[in-house]
Length: 168
Image (cartoon, rainbow, N blue to C red; front, side, top):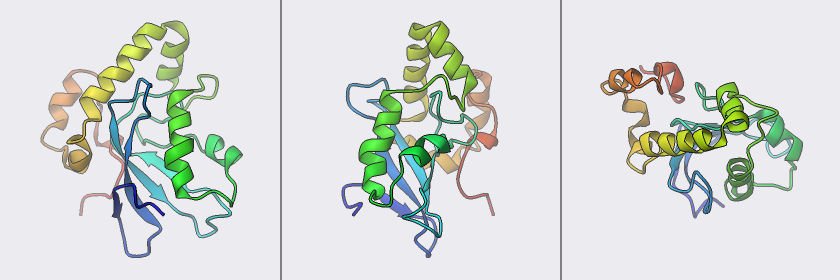
C-alpha cells in the first residue's frame, strides 16, 4: 500500500518505520524532503498512527525539538477507513498547506506566522534549505560531527531535536 514511497523499517514487528516525504507542491515546503517516523499503535487502524518529522521543520503544528505532529489534528480527522497512504497524500500535505497558528506545538512559529508572515515564510524556506534537502534525510541520525556548527547559527540546539533510535 506504500509502494509509491520509500519506506525503511525500524524493527521487525512492522509497527515502526520511516517514510520519505516530499513537501506538497505550491507550498512553502515544496522543496523539502523529510524523513517521517511512523508508529502504529496496537489498535491500528482504529487508533491513529503517531507521526513525527525526523529532520527539522519550521511549522506551528510540529514540535521543533521532537518533530511530533499535533495529535489533536490527526485524531480529530482519523477514521479506521483511512490507511497510511491517506497520511502522506492527504493529512501531511494539508497540514503543511494550512498551518493552524491558534493551536501550536511550536509557539515561535505560530507567533511569527501571525505577527510577521514574510519573516515566517523566510524562516520556513531557510529550514527547508538547511535541514530538508534530499541528502539530509539519510544523514539525520549522523549529525554528531556537524551539530556544533549548526548550533552557532541559532537554529539547531542539541541532539534533543533529532528523533529516532538512541545511540547504542
